[in-house]
Length: 354
Ligand SMILES: *Cc1c(COP(=O)(O)O)cnc(C)c1O
Image 1: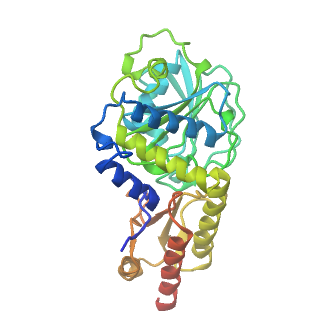
Image 2: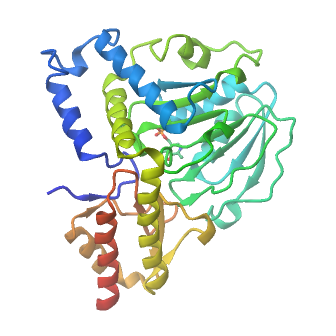
């Protein structure tokens, strides 16, 4: 039986996507060939890439606004350095909200002056800093929309006079935003869009070409734009499965429809965390993530009982990250409300037993 998959990443994908993907591995579109053994330059694969790119811009509401969607490789971790390589001439600003933004800051420091505009390190990244000012002399300002490990999420984005760059790896396509406030968005596919192996970059073309350094081709956004994500062999399988997931999302009613379901899932788990005295939420209430709910037991002696209960209920992937401890329920787009219901039932059962 399929488990209730709360894994933080790589994550659950829709079942119908899995079925189509497995068929395509054996015989793609009746070609008598596997998807993963045809040329990426074949008209069949070029159509997949084009469809994936256009679904991205359509779902984000960014068509005809000067944006390009790229499917690259190297994970979000490579974007940490590509952003700085391509966009920082002298100085950039970062919001530090935990592990991933910390890593982005470390890479950016190789290319210039990096100023940490605000940080929530003082309380182990359990909240999102607010009320900070972003100077207008920066080459760009970077932030992480959802902090996968700590379970916090930015609800209001700052108004800035400089290009706004966002790592949306773990909440892209999960909620409605005015995506045109961002000049560059990037996301590793494996948190909410597809399998590991490709990274989505959505970029407003007019922010490029402003740095004086030379950029190696593979790390140059302009090269990837000019070659439509086909400068070298793209990860065909990861792009195909991402395309299927985006199509699934569109058929469901797009981001507006999934946001409604995601909010229901988040309300269900957080109300259990708040009402059940055995559990305590990790993140500040106003900054709680609708994707990753982090919580701990108030009585550690119940750990073995709880772990046995959720495993017996067919739940998988609930252990928290080592830097927070406790538990983390990742509720990406493909996770059903029913699965969250199963977890909440286990949590209340523990209260009855404990
Ligand atoms: C997982 C994650 C990353 C790292 O992604 P890779 O694709 O493994 O490099 C970066 N940022 C955020 C917010 C993440 O959740």
